[in-house]
Length: 327
Image (cartoon, rainbow, N blue to C red; front, side, top):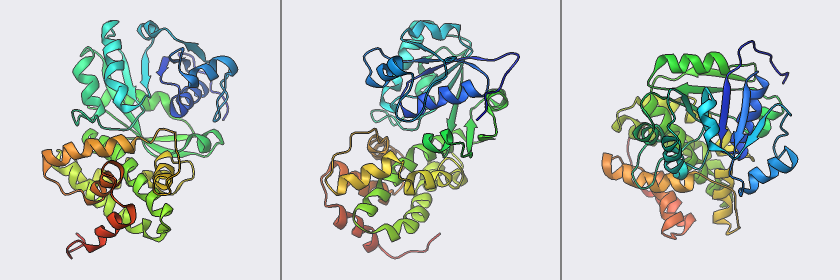
């Protein structure tokens, strides 16, 4: 991907330098913006970048800045956040404490808070100053594929149309085609829950039941569409890029942390990388209570992960449910 030159580049800081955050920094630098990556000095992933300016996925150009000073966010136009979803609230309090105002905050992450069942934009908007604009950047794609020049489609969504337009206008390239999202609830829930379906897919792989992943995709999407509708979103969002459109990267890909975690779990193999679906499925129990929506696949994953239920028997129970119409 050839680096683009801009007359008026945006000043952008990325909070979180794991696999996705470091890629976002690399990508926005290549589309011509002034990019800084922020990380904790004690974090191994950031120590690696400080020492070598590269990690196992990408190499950073000399133009990308590295900092451990959160105060630098005050001098930026756009703040990208890419951290563990359960850590988002503490990051937002840090931004509030430094008086962050009049910025565009973009969440490049997927999840639901366990304690509250809140969507990520709900967390941010409840803490930071109201002058800040909030958006999400979600959809399919893997760092390894993007870095190799393989293009994909993604979604930008926000309650504010001008914010969506500002981000898409400035972030688009031949590598990523952005679509304007029009259902923030549906897109956030769909993006978060596809990780749970990814874990279920990995469990099927680990149990030599890979042929069932087609049924998992169909029924998983239907299950999540009902939840989105109950929460006030558009059920069709589950069939878009945020959820069903992300299944290839989550349900089948060798790069998917959630799929690999599910496979490793049922094989009783150790897996240390972040799988957001592990936390999201716990948060879904709260949303199920709130909405009274039946979530059989999500419940099966929860029972296996948290209640130590037998994986094969629990997944088999899905086939013993009462007979019903498909739609």
